[in-house]
Amino acid sequence: MMWSNFFLQEENRRRGAAGRRRAHGQGRSGLTPEREGKVKLALLLAAVGATLAVLSVGTEFWVELNTYKANGSAVCEAAHLGLWKVCTKRLWQADVPADRDTCGPAELPGEANCTYFKFFTTGENARIFQRTTKKEVNLAAAVIAVLGLAVMALGCLCIIMVLSKGAEFLLRVGAVCFGLSGLLLLVSLEVFRHSVRALLQRVSPEPPPAPRLTYEYSWSLGCGVGAGLILLLGAGCFLLLTLPSWPWGSLCPKRGHRAT
Image (cartoon, rainbow, N blue to C red; front, side, top):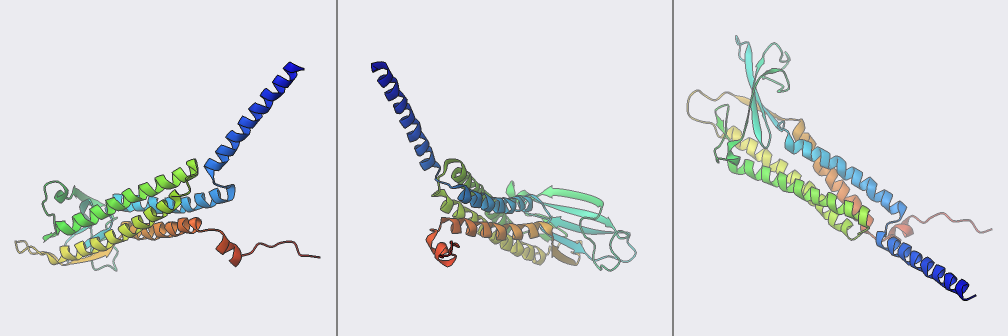
């Protein structure tokens, strides 16, 4: 009888300890399956914006500079540049669409010469078609874009901690990070636009004379605009998840069983 009571007490003690561990684990996670699914959907949206942001910052098709086609010449010149480097190309005029007065688009096959901007290393301005860049503006655009990527990575880390550790207070931090990264990317795009205008105005007086140019923004800049807007939308979704549920419950009450 004494041994049976001892084993019964030991079994009850083990069951109580297991129950306390389960309750502690549930209290630590803090995310219901429904709420976890909403966080994952918002994270998927933010991941699309992050992919577009990395693609935009890492490529050099932000703007295309096109010279006018010259009569009697078989080739023409075009260039495309981004935050880090510039590529000049010699294109065959036979490949250029007949309805274009200028050379391009830059995606056409041709002899390319790509160089990284030297104002990141030696501080020298770049010369493109007898025009000189304004390195201060270009550097500002690049630094702001890198800051946006860094803040975006911090936001991703916060949301991963929410999903893995149940730290729901990091939802608001992640939302702020994603919103700030979207704003920084959009500001970087605007600063880059000013750098393009400064480049077109800084014509070198040295021979040969600078050719006439036209410019058009390309797909890398479009990816940056889309990334900024999607990151802002993702930040809004995360902020909505941090709000208490009672205002939404009063606006959208659940359907209950009708009283008979």
